[in-house]
Image (cartoon, rainbow, N blue to C red; front, side):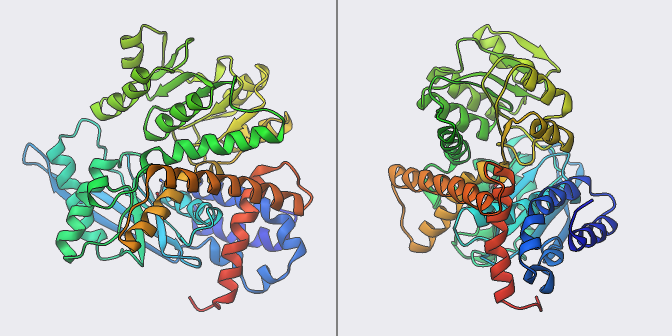
Length: 450
Ligand code: 2IT
């Protein structure tokens, strides 16, 4: 499968050890492919067993989360925290509450997080957690009790200098508030143990916008390489949550037009663009309603809604999938290529199946990989940690300026890393290599026995 015997051996062992974890193995394959050129040039990574150590989490915690629903019935969910790699800083990464969450999903996210966090240039290791709890249709009281029960166990394993969670799908400002409140109550400590906090209790300005804003800053940098820019381009976005919202907002600010958003129920097409403040704010209302239906947008603004379909067959210049893993498959990729789409910018974590990635590559579509594109979210989480440590807060402008610079650096470092190995223009390889190098050097420096 790989040209390198070493990588083959590592991958085979990983596949044998994790037989029911397709998402995790997919994420590992993606990184190992990019590392062919690196291990061919530098034998230290094999000598020090760096890659076999990297694919095994330092620690995996799985726990029962029991809670009582509004009808007095006992509910049981499963909680996870995977502490993947602490070579360059405390474990850092979000919590996802969604019925699709299982060990494979959390491990793929934690593995990717390690490289993503490294790319930001900030001192953060990789971790991820969550639960198969489904927040849809749950009352505020149920959400609070679930979060309190979840944190009662999680609090034993995290800390401001150990492991710092944040939000992800299904975990927004409200959930972070309940989680933080419970941690503080249990430990009698007000620390920066979680990011994405509200502004009144240690949150950072621009954190809600950061993932989407960062993704568009990255896209603009990438387009500049080809003598193009966001301005004047048409975008297809999927999802309508926090990440899609920030993406749509920033595309508009830079003069682009977004014609689609989507939900589990289908997608909407707005020929005028999701361009007014009212339309953009309505995305937040739809998310807050907990209905998880994008049809509400079509009903409100009188635009077409396509039930059960994805937006990728529409006409646009740049695709920015912002929903979830493996949301773009081969058929979607074929439609985009047939319509002349040249730029494919992953915003959700690992939104593209292996087959779709291969098809894009064959057809010379530029792929911007999620672990670089969406790193602005965790970067501003890192800035929130810095502000908490200083007991200080920066203005929106200060945070946004730092975010923009971080995204520029990520693009440049990825581009340069690919070029260094003769893969100029391969942004996927570049991100994997640049993210890997820093973590690998830190692991080698710190010795084997950990
Ligand atoms: O996937 C991600 O990078 C996140 N959900 C954000 C993680 C964080 O710690 O802010």
